[in-house]
Image 1 (cartoon, rainbow over the protein chains, first blue to last red):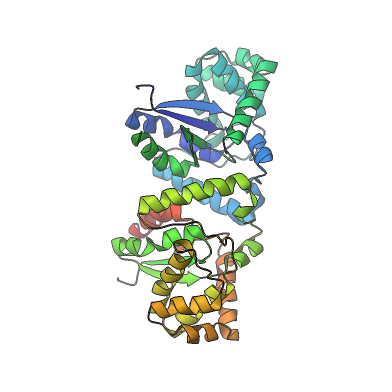
Image 2 (image 1 turned 180 degrees about the horizontal axis):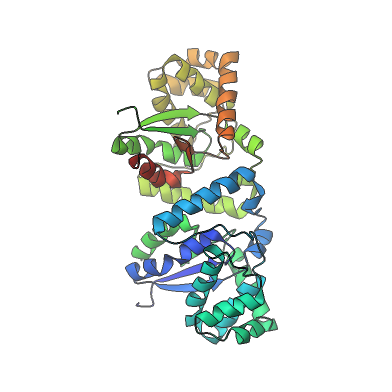
Length: 200
Length: 200
């Protein structure tokens, strides 16, 4: 990685399309020699600030979304099981990710993937701080310590700031990618993200 | 075309992603040996029946959508210019397409493409029945005659019936494709449509 190509990846563990993108984005980075910046934000805050109603509001859309998610998971060859708790409050999970990033940015991708899999493949309750701590332990982190750090005011403020930054730059959902000032919305735009990197 | 593979393509001239899909769908058909059934419906009716708010309701989404449309048009190598009248009433255009299909189904693809280009490349007012008639003339049809047929109660009823059928089968937007009972939403799912045909 030269440091010149950067893909910012804004995501929330509660978003199934963020999960799908998370399983692929590092491969996109390797193919394009780009660094991936994993940027946890709060999707509920994005919906609220941008005035975007959550997709769960339209019944036909939700039915189709489940099929669409299963197709993408099959296409990528990754496990997927619709979470029995959906939507769910991801505030603590996102705060723990911010806390992890403050301690060591390199822990964010493995912890994010572990949380995504717990929720979107193993149907675990990632709104529960004890469960979050156990998942962090499995990737070699100090789960209890991170859970405690999650309630630090500086961590809370940073999650709000990242969310506000994304909305300010044009985000209205998740996942959202940036290549410089170019914004891309959705797992299904990873091809365009890749092409934008290649064009740099 | 063997007649065994069929892609149903539900579209509205007022939908820019329907335009993009319309420029590609026959190529998908040729590659997969599938017949394309061009099925004009009324997107406004679909939004109303399914309870789906039109995307134009969220400012950040609209700004992004314009960029996204320009990226797809460049990717496909087709002209695109955001219509100065958007959204606009497509009731008469969709009725004329139904009328054309009743006279000769083979006229629907060329007439649809001519209307799409008039609206999404040349910024013409396709809510105006005189303009619709002139566009029909350019593809060798009797524009005046089709415009008159558009107000036939049987044509109006058929447009309502096609729209109701799409909603009944799960549609909530445009373009919507069916391969048998499998539904696909959006220009960006043409790859999945193609794979579904290949799997038949």
